[in-house]
Image 1 (cartoon, one colour):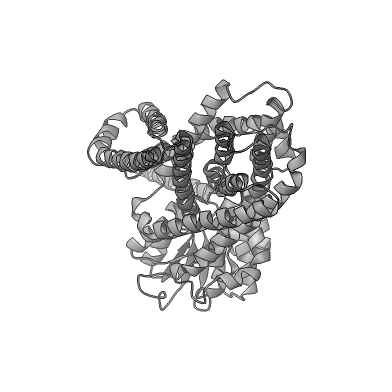
Image 2 (cartoon, one colour):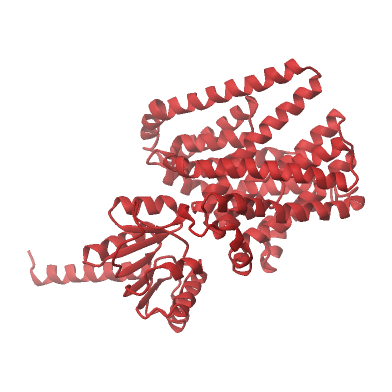
Length: 535
């Protein structure tokens, strides 16, 4: 009901699910509590989600994304906790309560962010990969903070030292065991299981849940375990098959996570915390993205990439509530501090969902202001061939280097045209480069990218993405730049052809329909030949 209502009002489904959780939780009807079976289904949904994310992680990209993810993750944690502590003190909190609030503000929700990026199909983009990277850094920080907090409750320094040493040793051992399984066990096992697609998928789900439970049992979060389970299968040739079959299961189970999250929020004692919550929420919504933009800009990334990645930390996590609840249990803070963190969670999770969904439009409005965070030459994202600034001659620029786009680019190149391929997925760019194509990282919706492309020599610009919104933005920008060549766009909806042509597209490709027509022609021609020359 809430999902249908939210869809009718054009609201994000995540908000509808959380509202549904509030409605059926203790605050309203009391049908669901944190002790029900919903918690189990929510945990399985989290495991499947992070497993699918791990499946898409290319180990070869860690060397390029790892440094910025680590620097951004640590920098954001230090900035948010430091300034958050000062703001909490300024609001009149005691030192211990202010410290708890400051730490709670540093955690961002991996589950919610990955879900939103997956829905927007940006999980494979550069900013999506960087965001997942520093969210994993945050998850590791969560584990350390929880261990330290639990050790403090023991009252002995030796307990703290032993706990940290244990986590270090166990963590290294956990990763080494998974690495050995990746090398010697999983590939031949999957080859045998793949004879039955159903058995392959069942094993994948069991593997994700098992490593999630093992990670949790070893003192890490279940997210880390499930993520590593996905990474362990990412180098096999079955990862796409597994990921495709798990999408529907992932979305169904995640519904229970968001309902469970809403059910845990007790709104009965939140009235006195509204003003401090607004101040702290504004800090999270504005400060966290800005520090990410600043760090990534310093490291040589464009301000657009920095903002799109930074908006993913504009909320606090469900772990923030768990962390605060643990503080109440130990006796470090009171219920009022937990209520404050809960209100901040409601505000930031709700608003950051909209910020991420409309991130591209937000960047268009803030691009000028954010220029101060970008180097004159953002060397991490400049084009194309290794060590070069790009090809000397370009006849055709192709946006989108997926299966359809890379095949089209290769065909154009084989016909004698000089092709420049553009994509926002670093893996697609790398694979196309390996095929001998000139490539450039970039997003078709980025006006600065379009302005810096060699449009003067190009006779063709081809967009292979079927998104009507992306194609409209690209068409508008090409016309604004005075491009005089021919423009080709792609759609999967025949009803959009006329609209795209009116907006300036010279040719509109409809891949499935075009392929079907070509197949019909081939079959009819073969049939005619068989009739003309009977056996």
